[in-house]
Length: 253
Image (cartoon, rainbow, N blue to C red; front, side):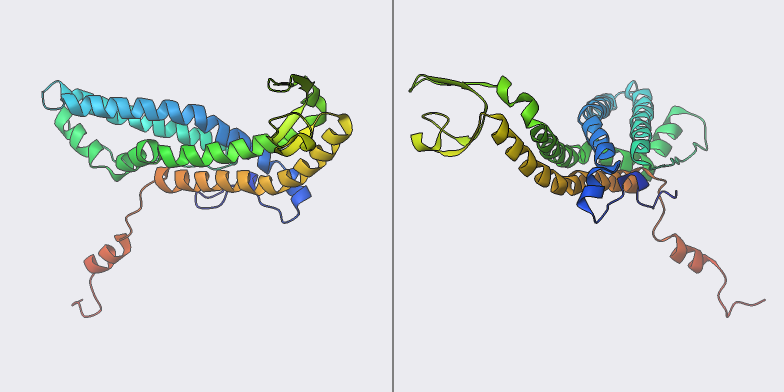
């Protein structure tokens, strides 16, 4: 599979039932949930080494730290490339080779390399938006799946209404301030019996069919961002520059 191709493991099916029982939603779940931990760790590491190295770069001691910081950031980006394999993406890496010896040559080469800057954009600048995207999609999908198996656990949730002295076990969806029945005021649904739990489970299964597209879409969007920023940098003006450097049709033979 080429780096530009969409991940096959996140394939979208038009049939919601086929979509639900395909590997896509579950692969997307693993990909999104892993970013909540791995992405947060990599963000903390990349931001810390970047700020620390630049803060000390005013002294000579900061030069080797800048070299090390570039290496650590590349390592963090490589971890994200490895995580992309979960969704079937193979993202190659390509960084500029250091043509000269010396610390200053390494600093200049590594920090003028567009690949290093793109790593920083993905790991640091886009961490917030990607975290929000992944968290929302994962939470909605996980909530739908949990409610599908509602008949297995609804009875284990204790509820107490202090103003009425009512105690009961079940799941309250909405706001029922005076007890588990609509007649007592408030609005919502009380699930305190197996038939009610089965009906609610069927309803949430229908919602879960729609949520599969949300979780897979979020994973595809995240993978596309990673694929765009972490793959080898391609100069968009490379073709134009090559044309300018080549001899034209009027050049002498």
